[in-house]
Length: 265
Image (cartoon, rainbow, N blue to C red):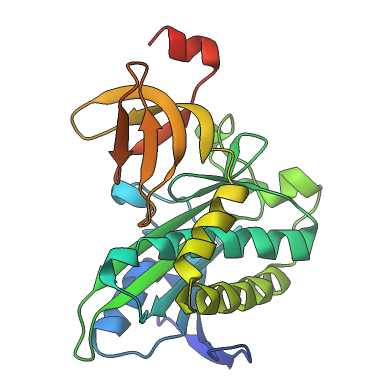
């Protein structure tokens, strides 16, 4: 079957251009392909379904047709590369803005890239970088579960959908429009003077995982427990272990613990 898309230009700060696909392997993969051949900042890939949707660590992202928002955007930040990890923070804040404005829903941010409501995952964010003829680009992918069928049966204890949370299927295009606007605003803020510090403060204020949260941290070669103590200037998580040592986590999975579980670690 020949894949088709049409273009929509949304009038916000950096005038993104949305390319809409009926079906695609992955919106992030398509954004990477387009960035590699010089696509400009602001090109957005949106699909009704993904046949090979993915999250961090190449985990599969279940993407049935019309059951979620499957979205990726090409960005070319005027920021030091050391600050590019904050694009994930920026995107998370934009998702919170869009959910609040479109559905009246308040959500939580779990480090580094998940949006949670009632301790269940509603949205995931995947940020990647790529070189291109006109310089490096960042791809920020966002997947939001809209309908209940977006959540496989084996994940219903740890994931949720907007339909489950608000009792109806959300207006997909309305939420997408608010998301694109929020990204534009948050992205401009990140690149303004003092924007990195402001973004970190906003992220910490909107994440229950930022400070004083007992967590287990799974790294490639080990797992340890501790209490979160804020984040570094590049978004890395500070975790204080029971011995009093503060460890800096730049890549890993974080799981919330009860205080009693931390004592037993």
